[in-house]
Each structure stands twice: as C-alpha cells, then as structure tokens.
Length: 460
Image (cartoon, rainbow, N blue to C red; front, side, top):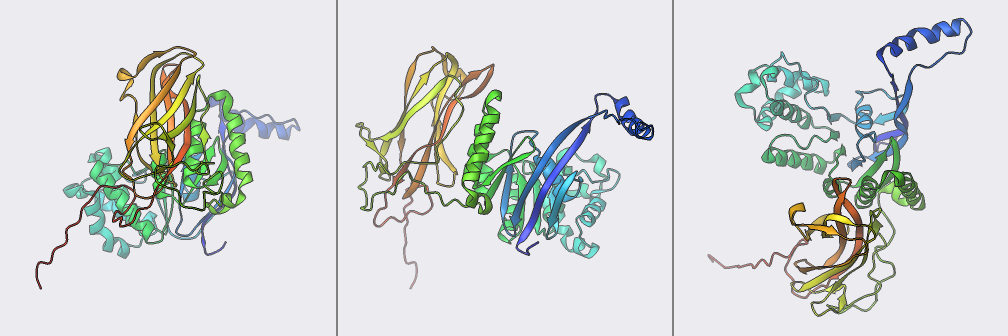
C-alpha cells in the first residue's frame, strides 16, 4: 500500500446469520455436521443478511471523507471493521497510522473503575503508553469538564459525562486517522462547538478523518469527498455536494422507485470515473461556456444554466420554470450586490395535497447552504388543502447580500403524504446566478454584512 494512502478497503463484505428462533441456532451447530457424516445434503437453518457487499475505496493521507446513506445501509458496520472491532466475512482492510475511533463512546469503560482509571485504560486501548497518557492527562480532564467526578466510579456518572470523558480521551490521542460515527452530538452546544474545533484542529494538522453523518450540511462543509452507501452497497464516491444531493433524492424516493434511482446513481458515476477516483469533477458548472464579454449587472446570460440539477421523485406535484427576475419582471442571472430580486417558480398539482408549503435555498458552488425561506413557518400556517389540477405561482423577494461569485438556488414543495410531511417535489440546483464584481469592493467572504471600517492614527 502506498505511503500516501491512509485507508485501503478491497472487496469488503459482512454477512450475518439470522435465525428465526433460538433453537435454530443449536440446530445449525449440530445437524449439518451430522448430515455430512451420514453423507446427506446438509441443511441451512438460518437466512443470510449481507450488511456490506464487495465494498472498495481508498482514503488518502490528510483527506476528510464522509460516509452517508439511509439507516441500515452499512455505515456503522463499515467503520467498526475499519477500526478492528468487527471481523469481515470477506475482503481486506489496510490502514496506515494510529486510529482513534469515536464509535460507541464509553463502551469500553469499566463501570467499577474511576474516571481517572478509565482514562488510562482507554488510552492504552488506543495505543498510548503510560508516559504519553501522563502528559495528556490534565488536558483530557479539562476537555471532559467533569470536575471532581474524575475520581468517582464511572457507574455514578450520567450518560453525558461518560461520553464526554470518552470523547476527551480519543480526541487527545493525537490520531493519524480519526474515525467518527455520529459522535458529534455529545454534550451541550458549547461542548459540541469545542468538539468541532478540536476536530478542525486535527484536520488542519494533517490527520485523515473518516466519519458518518446524517447531516448533509456537515458533510459538505467538512469533507473533501463523500461515499454513498445503500443496502450494503457502495453506490458512488464523489464531491460532497453531489453525493448529498443523490442521497437526499434516494431518501425521499418512494419504495417502488428506489431500485431505478440506485441504477441511475451507479450509471452517473460510471460516466465520470475521474470524479469517482479523485473526488474532483472536471464537468463544467454551465450548460455552455459563458459569454466572453463581461455581462452587465441585472442582465440575463443564457449560458449561465446549471447542469447539476437533481430532481426528486414527484408525489403529485411538479416544479417548473425556476428563475430570478427584477422587481419589474425582467429575467436576470447577473445580479448587483445590495439590490432586491424575485425568485419565481410554478407548481402544478396532479393530485390533491394538504398542509402545503413552498421553499427556496441559496447555496455556494460547493453546496454550503447560505440561507433560504419557506412560505409558512409550520403546518399550522401552511395551505390546508390544494385541489388536484391547481397551479400555484410562487414568488420570494430577497435582497442580494452576497459578495461577487457564483451561487445556486433550490426549489421545493412539501406536504402531507400518508400522515408524514415530505417533499412532494424538489429541485436541487434548480437555477444559478452570478453576483457581479465591483471596483473598490472591500467585502470579504461570501456574505455582505455592509461592514464599514474606520482607521485613525492614535499616535505618531
């Protein structure tokens, strides 16, 4: 394995034996052997459940990779096998560097031991010597914020105190590979922020990070690449923005359409092998090359059209014609910072719907959500009933408080489906626009906060 590769997974599979009743386990242990001795065909008393099937990928040193997928897709099983707490049925895993795992936090603690004793026990499991733990001990205790309880038995701790201590030990082990399974929600908001800050510092120091999250925003913000799993199969690897969009499309798809969507996702990645290998896409953002001559503010460039649009499966509603307009109605996609615009689209309902709301979202080219709006704050203020055949025109007026750059827009409509609120239709990257460059613009970052600077000489 190359020294530039931190994790290499090849043909990884995990099969569980599922027994209908406890006595079948005993039958499986005894009867097949007896049947073979009697030269009879041996019978199987269990059914196979493949949590993972033939999964393979590489994670390079210093890379942050997110694993996303629906519940039961095999994400946690994959991380456990990488960390060595679960043996694979088939395939190989190779790692290069010390691993710190934030999986089932506190699972390895002895409840009869004190917090102090468990720090040394857990540190040893992570590969730290007593001398290394001594050097880190004060920092671990300070990070965990459990005070004098450190010398009390773990069995007297609250569940929050246990996971905070476990997190503090793992995060201070100076890992070369950090594996995280939805462990970023421990403690209160201040402690969570401290956890994120420490993970960001570990990432900045060049560590490799592999983590599971159901938060698309976290994956987009933190990751260089994302892996999409579904039903134990690796469907796709690519840029976080695209993988999160495909995951969400799969998540909200009706059961009878999931197989078709899975096939589409596989085919899309087969069409872009460069993206699959490197996590970078050479596919342009536009349908055509934009005009060579600089466009004027408040103008329309027909080449500025996204080709990354992803449509969710429709549940009796279809979104059409998303576009930005001036307040007087003209269509534009080259905007001026500080001016107000209208984002419009239509929704046609082929079936009746209840508790209907409409929404929009503005994102960066990498998929980070900057802000959006909904037509109603909750079901209580939504449209109670929409008749089949109705057509609604949706309009959001917004102030363009963005610095120069390219941005994307989503459009969505939600309503009740079988008693649950879900997307009746949604378009990811439905439209895009450019905020034009300006001379003497002193704003930085993406959002224009209209900051004004004052500089004065106080001496000399």
